[in-house]
Amino acid sequence: MSESRSVFREAGEHFESAARFGFEDAMQRRLRYHLLRLTVVGLTRQDVEELGKLARLAFDDSDVTQHATMLRQRADASPLASAIAEIMASAALGVGGPVRLPEVMLGAVLGAYAALRDAGDAKQADAAIAGAVGGAVATAVSGVVLSNIEQVGATEYLRMDE
Image (cartoon, rainbow, N blue to C red):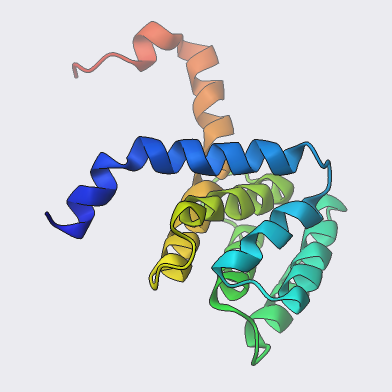
């Protein structure tokens, strides 16, 4: 069976595992615990500190671009930390619609949880990065989608005809 076929068949299990970890860490009420969880998929302690600072800037509605650039350019930054910094820098520059940087940050961090089920797998860093991108996109765009649904109604939004 191909690898993508296997992932497809296990998507529910990946979701359940990631959500379970996410809810468990959310109970700690500190971003630090989400970031520490991601050390199993490549974040270093320094990445945790730097991403914490990036999150504080986002939540303070401050410019994140300088710190994101510094993090991306740090020679020993993990691929996941660099990816989250890149996502935040891109979001800050604008992506075709209104985005809230705290939501993008949380989406990227929690999306990376998609790789936790297979922690230790050689491709876990790639899965964490793909999850971070997906989570950031989902949180950035979902507010607009939900607003559209409020405006036109669920029945209209869910229509499949032209």
